[in-house]
Amino acid sequence: MSLASQLQGVLEKLLINDADRATYTAEAVKICNILMDDLKIVDAHFRAAFDGLGLTGSYLDRVKLRKPDEFDMHVKLKLPFKVTPVKDTQRAGFVFLRAEGGESHPAVVDGFVNRKSLQDWLRPAFHKIFEVYRTRQLTGPHYMVRYEQQGYGCAHTIVAENSSKTMCISFDFVPAFEFSYNQWPLPPPSFVSQHVLQNWTWFAVPQQKKPADDRTFIVCAPHWEREMMKGNDNLKNTLRLMKAFRDRHIGDLPHLSSYMLKTVILLQLEKCSEAYWQQDLTTLLIEMWGNLLTHFRQNNLPFFLAKDCNHFDRLKRDDFLQCHQTVELLFAKLKHFASYPTPMMLNNYLFNKN
Image (cartoon, rainbow, N blue to C red; front, side, top):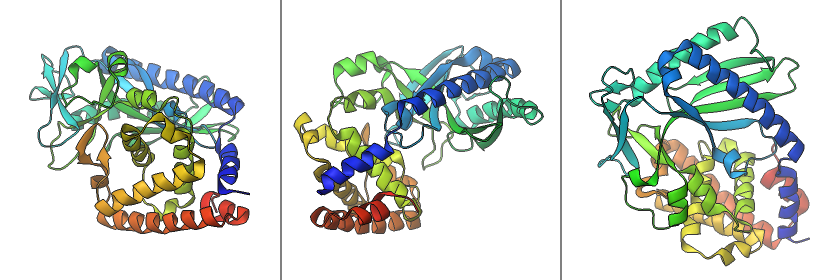
């Protein structure tokens, strides 16, 4: 049996079934609605600013694997004054958010939305509702909830487990400011169609990068990316396999994020035709993993919206070296199994977790 046909079998085990997707999504919507309603009750500024939730990440792209139990959510904020994105000239891919008339708002410092102040404003609101949740279950769906990552980086992480302990769902809530393309302050992304640019928004989300400045927000455009990846045959299947490959060896690939793998795909998408993704899974997986290795050898994985922004800058040196070594080893293994496909080795070494 060829490796391509075996990979197809691996994919079938990775895909989320429709029943699970519907069940988890329904529960997630209930939990999110309760959390956001409670935040609006305890914080007047949040009540005035909350502009809805937006799905992002692997679930939006429909490349989440095995179980739909993790949701990346943008908490869209529309402050009661004009907020204008301004290009950060020191950090590619980053912006400042100029606030006009918002001097009294807790997220604004010296005329700009301040990333640290923004999180310092939201964190106590989460703490207030969790003081109540500690003494009773989340009303409605009967979940016990925990507040984990508390916005000291980018996300506020909530974990909800039902009373029978048969379902556990985690949420990363990231504060986000939404803009239309006519407010895009960076060089035009020529590889994204005008139709997509005009019909889908982009976001600024809190992230830090040296040199330190509490005003920094990174741009992101999950809907642009989703539209770019549509209708490209084996593109998403290749990304799913890369994610599963990473997951199997996650202990040796510290902090190699799903978005880094997706970036490899997006960069390839810029320079190839749709016919490229009609190739078999073996060819595509080896080529895309090889591209990842090339990026490690060059110590550069460019952000597809800002090529001078290197995603590897977020890795500590030891983690980068560990990832590089492992990616190199796994690339050799992939090529070996392509020539000598062995089902047992494929399942036990390449994709199945211990």
